[in-house]
Amino acid sequence: MSAKTFTAEDAQAANIVLVGAEKGRQAVHDLVIAYRANRRTGSANTKTRGEVSGNNKKIYKQKGTGNARHGDKRAPIFVGGGVVFGPRPRDYSKKVTKTVRKLALRRTLGDLVRAEKIVSVPSFAIADGKTKSFVAQLDSLAPLGKILVVGNSFDEQTYLAARNVAYAQLVTGSDVNVEQLLLANTVILVGDAVETLAARTA
Image (cartoon, rainbow, N blue to C red; front, side, top):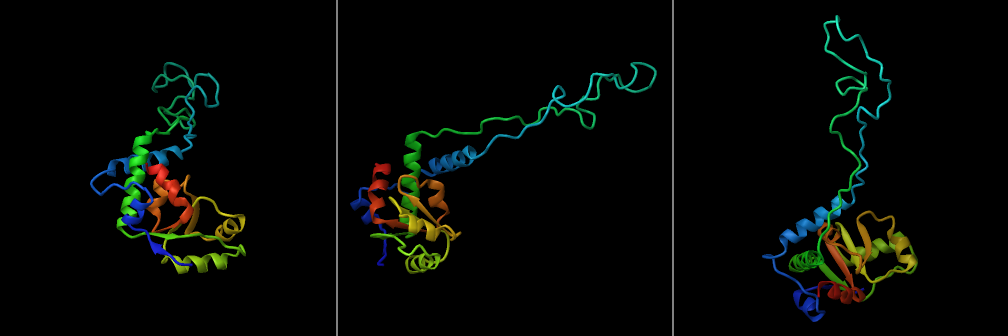
């Protein structure tokens, strides 16, 4: 299978909008932070003194012991007591506008094109569904490292062949995100995905 380095001229011919290194850096940062924040479950939880187990019995008498005046044993200063200002279930998600998302994608694709990390192929499929065949095809297209294969769709046999290869990932042109592109050493752009990326950057 013949592979070709995807250049800025190719991007222009495909109507993929790119931006230079002087613009979009903050957009990329904001978007990656949002991706990672949105993956957080926010399920950390501690119990207050009103939620921990225990009764309301006074731990010792009010006067005469020489100790401080204490009520029940669920106070935060005691072992097994409640937690003060501990984490509670919350939503960590962040929203990013469409304009920022588009700018971040344009900047990331621009950086990859300038670094010559994108190669284009007319098609990508593994007919026999074997991992060995998938690895051999990757070796013929890209050097070692994290490889991202971006196409509009992949057949079941191709997904089957790719699922055990940790350094490679198949993703559709409509789903690929900036974080995945940033982490890739090489992006293999399958011909039918070019139009999808062009629509996302327009």
